[in-house]
Image 1 (cartoon, rainbow over the protein chains, first blue to last red):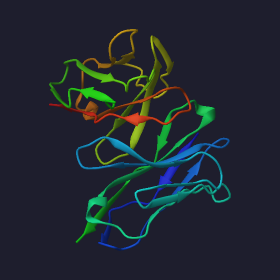
Image 2: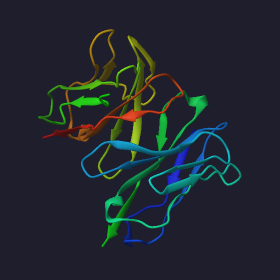
Image 3: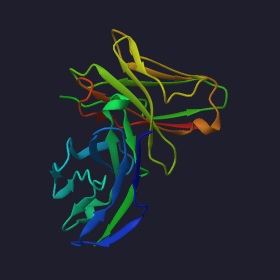
Image 4: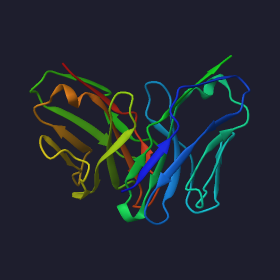
Length: 113
Length: 113
């Protein structure tokens, strides 16, 4: 079945540091890929998405590129802020599995001033 | 445009009681999804519904759990005879159609004493 693997946290960074969170997937066919962010005590917010190979999703300084050859969708941000402290979830929506989302385990990111 | 609404935000139940969680999708959205997040884990798909129909319930426990999305009113996730292992955050998401991006509500945090 479909699965998503992302790096375990917590990831602790200083403000203005470079952030990378690795995400790889296994799926039948060509899924859509997503990054969601969860702030403490809140629900998930869509951060960015990509629906086909080589697409780059971007939002709020975050980027991720859909790499079919490596089945990856790594999240990057060039200069993090304290307000980026949150849990980040990589997810896929496999067309063969209807529209349900399959999530990775989440990566907690803590940005210190 | 109001987002996905869930209530209650917090729910405390004793073992053996019933829990009813409500989800009102975004305006214009006719597809609803329920996910469960156990402590320190990622989200797991439970059920996918359209108005008056259950499309995919492959993630629902076979006993005690049921879901509905009536023609009028919110979607309801019902847990009968709750046990401590049901303690989790339950998130609802909605989309305007299948294969479209899902938008999440703030979640209901269920605590079973």
